[in-house]
Length: 104
View 1 (tube, helix red, strand yellow):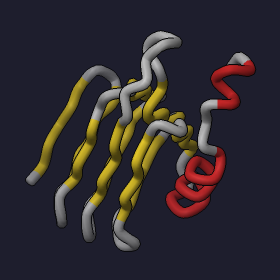
View 2 (view 1 turned 180 degrees about the vertical axis):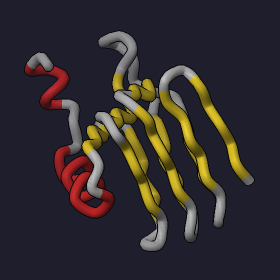
View 3 (view 1 turned 90 degrees about the horizontal axis):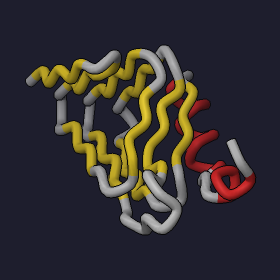
């Protein structure tokens, strides 16, 4: 990671998600995060959310995980700026390795 990317990381959100869910996560400053207390994030690699695709990209991103919902990430995954991920109540979103599975 270069210095500019290190400065664009929201370390408080990243450390909180990593600690709460025992997963390695990197959340950037341009991401709005709303996660229910009962929600779970599982990751076998590093989960990056809100990474800029190019330097001038100022789009915001969002991560919303509802009550009793789970986000499962296999391998290292990067979700770039402008993406909004919502996992509804009691739902599971599983992605990684090029495949995305939505379980309702």
